[in-house]
Image (cartoon, rainbow, N blue to C red; front, side, top):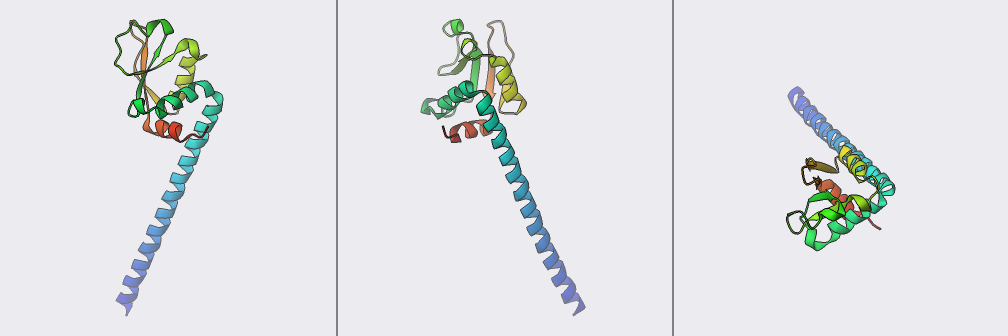
Length: 139
């Protein structure tokens, strides 16, 4: 009977350990999701014009799979040989656009793909999580 009790105790202990580990993992993931949503909501209120424009672009079926975008001056849009269709945000339309993008970059929502070059534009990429947050945002 000692071996049966020991095996039974081991199985019960293992099952309880798995349940506790799963519960803890679920809690941690839930906390992380809540934190990301809170950061996104705060950024939405700090940079409404830019994020609303980005949301409109991500909701547009023409850009369903588009993740890269350019930062340009308005007078550049016709002079550059950019891939079509492409997303572009103009410095003249958003006060402190570079600073806003730096904030989004710091939180991992966008990443810089290329540095500003001789044509004076920079290419960025949306993270999938950011696209998901934009698409799910209720306005």
